[in-house]
Image (cartoon, protein in one colour):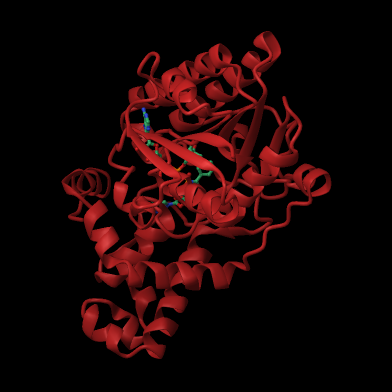
Length: 360
Ligand code: NAD
Ligand code: TYD
């Protein structure tokens, strides 16, 4: 039996990872450390509430001594670090919290890892640290230069550098994954895919920033969890692995696809029209809600990840076909209205009003 400390385990990827891990590693014990910010919600772990293999600790990764105490108390040998402020638009409005959590918080955890002598410190990072690509440029490799453009990306880049330094200087056994855009269940509805699905269900505009031609490389969250599992099992200490879906879409094409899938879903289940009377999908017209809005300042044009290293060294291949993954994600949001009603709190509504200048 192993014990893992998982930071940010009540967020989108963290909660999927906890579920993934406990399903596949029956003898292991997971301790989640999460501050429960607006993006972290215990309802995302509700199905695991009675599982004796899971402990939840409500706390801040920045609290001195807390992570170290938890690692010692539970004899944890692995720390998987998801906790972060993760939304680019919020980092544009208030960068400070990104530095506090993403940079200083990571530092506190690295100190804890160093003090305790962990077997592995796995840092979950993003492709956004590499900056932006033009249309013909090759995808980011692990050797691409760091050129972060948003306060979010800069804070993650700084945390990556700290992880590297703690490995080189103190011998902390680190691994890092830099992953592309994730989608799937439990994603907070400020990010593109759940925002579009939930706005459409409520008959609200589907906001597309700028010309809609910015490109992202989408990966199902379960594929990301599998990549981290592979790196924990067989990855080499001190190494960095890029993880992508080899699945580039511009935002407009992706939103149009989501609109088509919603139209199809409503056509296949006529009762949905009664449940969501404001949604034009019952008339096969979801795309009529598409609305171009002012661009994000400093909006990165294109991300694309070269996953050659993790594919050839660890055998990672994304498993979920995109249209199928999106269909299942739409189904998940349809079946979990209680979840999204719970997480879309006053703070969420304030954010939407502030950023989009309209009511949530
Ligand atoms: P999220 O915003 O959904 O969840 C973040 C979680 O961290 C929340 O549960 C929140 O409560 C917790 N948290 C925040 N500050 C904390 C603190 N000070 N102490 C303890 N807990 C705290 O984020 P996500 O989308 O699940 O991303 C998880 C990680 O993966 C992040 O590090 C992010 O940079 C990285 N990542 C995300 C994506 C993506 O597409 N979402 C892609 C690549 C990498
Ligand atoms: P997002 O989900 O915020 O992820 P990231 O900025 O980390 O890639 O956004 C994905 C893309 O969608 C990005 O190019 C910005 C764009 N976008 C919109 O066009 N409209 C929106 O309302 C949001 C939230 C994002």
